[in-house]
Length: 443
Image 1 (spheres, rainbow, N blue to C red):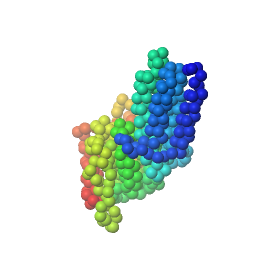
Image 2: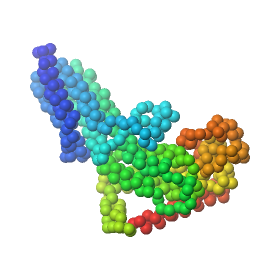
Image 3: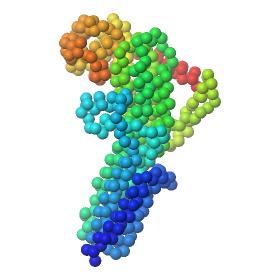
Image 4: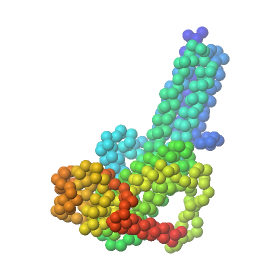
């Protein structure tokens, strides 16, 4: 009677469709397992298991195979249900959106890498639940495949393959991580705009960390701690890698896009950069903070809870640390060059430039730094000539109009014995000491 069982398979499909429809609006989470997952996922797999029991009591041949095909279809549909729980992409004029568009255009990257998302307050938890549920489904699909292959007739065993369904859940996981990264960056749009609105050319003294730095700390810390506690460590590591790289690039482009920075302004920004770099270096091992007694000035003081809530490592991965240091090194080098004395700029630039890079990019970057220093464009040609570069290369000095497109060719500050490099390192050490003193006073 196998050839007459299609109504039975259709009935099973309609039952699963009802579950999928309910799952679209059901945000209930099952917390009994290792990770919180939507109850709709466990309910769907329980139904499939019971369906297998019902079917195999009658037949293990064609009808069972058709039922398995129905499972595949509904699993792909469920992956779509989970994807729809993610926030939709947004179009706007935020700093992050503009940077994403610029990066995407220049690198011809896929639309996935330039799509911007805004996460409503506390909705990062829902996105983490999507990630956990997708991982649960991908693992359970593999077990389901083994169960079906074990019970189905010999003629159909080789036809059982659910790798596409596993891939569907893995794709949603990858998108969810991109949404978390983009959503956190969107929440940092206000402090990035504050950088652009600040008149850095009017700074005549260095103070404490800028207010935008504190805003970044207060935004990033709770978001990252929440994500770390909710998703598997491998996915959290991927989130940290992607966010640190993306934010460092956006931060760099924001600073390079400023009109002019005074020498004191560069020192202030170096202090800010060091503080933000320290935060990002700790990103993979951030833990919850708790309020303590009122600090100086009646403000709430915070301190890090020494209890490792997630049970993970307290040391950031070496490759991650290397990546963050590399990305921020170009920020530090750029600011040191902008803050250097005018008569030392050519020598300092030459000391930190890779001569293997084409001279057109060299002329472009030098002119951009000179512009940030406030050096009149009429003087650029003479300085480039001293540097040994033709001012007409790279569109000439007058052609350097968009500082946000400055190339990343400025090399990392090397361990050199020159007086110039020694002076730069000494300046950075002073900034670091000032940050440490400030943190101690703040606590």
